[in-house]
Amino acid sequence: MTARLASLLALGLLLSACCGTPENSAPLVKQKSDQGKLELTLVTTPQPPTRGLDSAVLTVTDPSGKPVAGLTVGLTPYMPAMGHGGSVQPTVTDKGNGVYDITNLYLYMPGEWQLIFQFSGPVTDSATLAITVD
Ligand SMILES: [Cu+2]
Image (cartoon, rainbow, N blue to C red; front, side, top):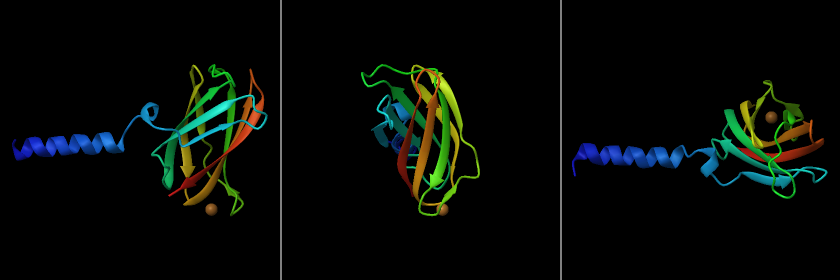
């Protein structure tokens, strides 16, 4: 094969390794909400999250696995070791079928962060998801 073809193949492998869609990724966090009403699955981009502006997809089901759509989702990033939050309010968009897109997730320091979720609407509950930023 030609060198050009080989480099294209290498590029393709690189792209597929670095930029898999969230749907194809194993979750970073999977846990129940505080009152156990919801099952939460978080996939971040990049995953694991890196310092800076990240995004994520939160998938929400009830305990039987049925998607929970139509929630109002409040999200506060917080760095417990240092007692501060983020300077940017993340945006949460209901994509339907229990899928919530999170953008503007600005995690500007490496270390342990908490994503503190407040759910209201069809279900009221809360959850704190611990993540580590590289
Ligand atoms: Cu900090």
